[in-house]
Structures are given as C-alpha cells and as structure tokens.
Image (cartoon, rainbow, N blue to C red; front, side):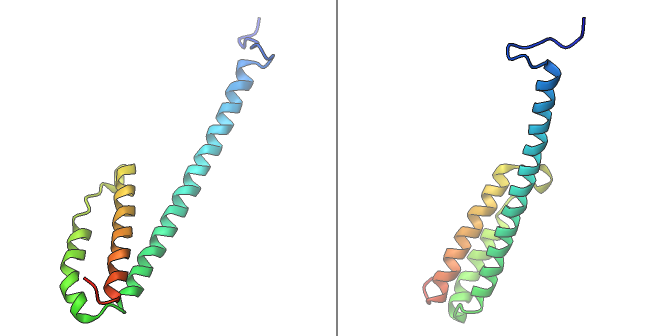
Length: 109
C-alpha cells in the first residue's frame, strides 16, 4: 500500500498538495508584484507633490508648511513589521498632502 490515498476525483493527496504549493508560490509572486506597483505609484505621487510645491505662493507655503510638516512627522510607522495599517497611513497622508498642496497653488489655505 502506498502512503498517498486516492481522493474522490482520483487525484492523490500528493498531487493536490503539489498544486496548492504551486498556487501559493504564484500568490507570493503576485504579492511582490502588487507591492512593487504600490511603491512605484506612491513614489510618483510624492514626486508630483514635490513638483507642485514650486507653484505654491510663498505666503501660503509659509502659513501651511508647519501643518504639512506636522502631518508628515505625525505618521507613526513600523516599516520592519510590514503592516497593512502602515501602508494605509502612507496612502492617506499622500492623498491629503496632494489635495492640500494643489489647493495651496490656488492661493487657498
């Protein structure tokens, strides 16, 4: 008698296990790809914020910069843990800063 039992579909436990292993390896690749795309998109958005800063009037920049810096400094991350909540916080902050800086370009605070 073999150590692998036949399942209802005729596939052995070993074949099912191997399929699961292959799918999990594929999932690992998808996680890496999605993470890399998230990083690239957010880095691009940060570069966009930086370029928009040049068009913010000096009086608005002087008035708004302390709040913007406080928002950036207030972001509490633990990057080594790879937490989803850290990524959500980064995403939220980038969105808020984008809106605020673009609004600042129009001379609004």
